[in-house]
Length: 311
Image (cartoon, one colour):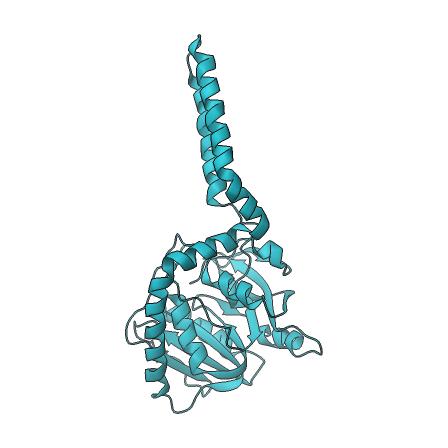
């Protein structure tokens, strides 16, 4: 349900505009008629190109210093903040309402949060892969974004709730699951992806080791809708690289719980970059150590329905 990670992504709007402008200038040079007017147009085109370079210079400098993903996220927070405040109030209301309906808080060493909306068959498969983990001190919290839940397995480790109305914001749905649960570690799984049985065991092996990190993410085995393997995405964590390339995904992320481990509440429509997965991990890594485990433990579905799903 979140935006698909793409290692090496990092082309900003300024670069796109530059390429478009350069293409237009080149086209003008090829199609202009021969004769005295040619030099005049060439000179005008050269001046326009210089003006574009000058106008682009601040963006280029900022992008080099901070990374285009960081700059875009600053813009998002400025433009989308009013809606996020309203969504925070809705989230608070839902947490209070749903907590009163649970016989007990979902509590374990690891809590896995699965956000869902109108994917009954895929959800059952995701839940089955979460419950099949070799780590048994584990609860699974399914949060439906107001569409209603399908029938799910009867398992004491499984808790499933529905929001009163659709929010359309994956971060809010996941935050409800985080806040309803009580655990030392948190993990996340989308309703159209699957885990290998050793996903949590591998993560805890690193997290609980002496001197271990606060958060880890494994490699993604990206698969096509017909089940064939597309590739394996495995990129070591580097904060500077992460500011310029979108390779972080919370389906592979397991981290020690604290108050900073909350998803962004911004309403990220398909054209809003970066996605909430990137924002969560990048923000968490400011004050926590994050490490990559180069072993694929996530089967990540690559298709239009799993990239930027509009709920």
